[in-house]
Image (cartoon, rainbow, N blue to C red; front, side, top):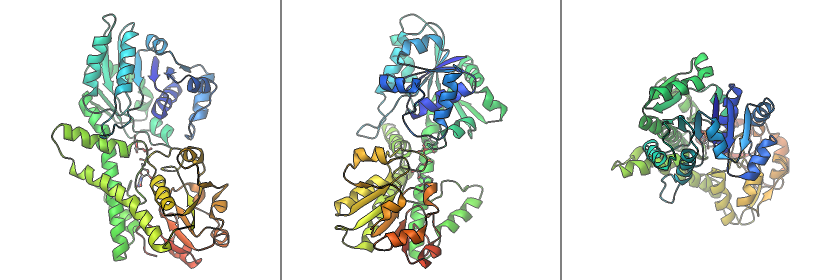
Length: 434
Ligand code: UDX
């Protein structure tokens, strides 16, 4: 089977490379010429473990190719995935102009029956809308079907999530399109992946409901963590015991500085907006969004209330990306925290294994360190914002000898409070008793 994937961002590239690995012939298309030239050479423009080697392997065996020509991909392919961006508009709703433009171009280049699949996260009703746009833009009378096949890829483990997903959701009306989609995902049938086959609107809503629910879980545990600090309880034990209840589950109950990334902040707002358009108020999702903002602010207050006046205080920041194993800094809690510390006159010495180049665009004027030890050199305080593995086993004696003062804010709770305290640090976590 030949398929086309339009958009070589994070979702598109992972989808294209993984389907090629499944044995499908894939043409990935992007209008960005320089990006396509790099990809043809096997250079992936962002950091995702395992992706570059998968791209190179499938480039070499001829199952994966890159092009700027959408016509080329449409003509050769039975299935075309739309994986272009849906950035938030000012009011939180998703901007569908890229998706709609791609749909028009697909329509103009159709040469037979096509299955047109939305992989981008799109509001409920987009499938219907695309059907209309494509019907109007068709040059000749070709048959086509629309499918919603939302992605659930986590940055940093996207290949694993694609190859071994918890479920595959396929929203479609036509049995023919469903059969083709099942065939495409056949390798996952073999490993008994659950398939949810439903209508387009339900599939579209599943994505928003899933992401928003996870955001709610995180905000919930963050509020419980804050309460733990007041009553002397340990949030890790609370979360562990809660998670042992199978109705709750142990995942996404890790407290911290709040969620970030390209999905949760955007998708929660888009779901709230969508509900409002239909006269519904999603109070729980709204609360999760508010708590997330308050959590970032609380992290800054934690630092300020310990250090006092921040003027000329040196603060080492470890971790800039919104989570480990990615260079993505979109909506990262580090942005808010650094901004506020800078405003109060602090000198920032930051280190991240992958995200420093991206952060330099936002903060050209902070100090970017060589490694965690360089970041801590002369620092009054150390703040861990992202739980990269390489921060889990720092030589704390060495850090102590390099720092000017001993404040240690572990915003991801990766250290054992009593051990760090015994070493002489003034340690604070999120919701754990010291
Ligand atoms: C998310 C969804 O998990 C994925 O299914 C969807 O398709 C895209 O959005 P991603 O944004 O890559 O994936 O990251 P994820 O691992 O879900 O983490 C999101 C944010 O929540 C990160 O900032 C992370 O640090 C935070 N988080 C996650 C917590 O603070 N606590 C947790 O327990 C889990």
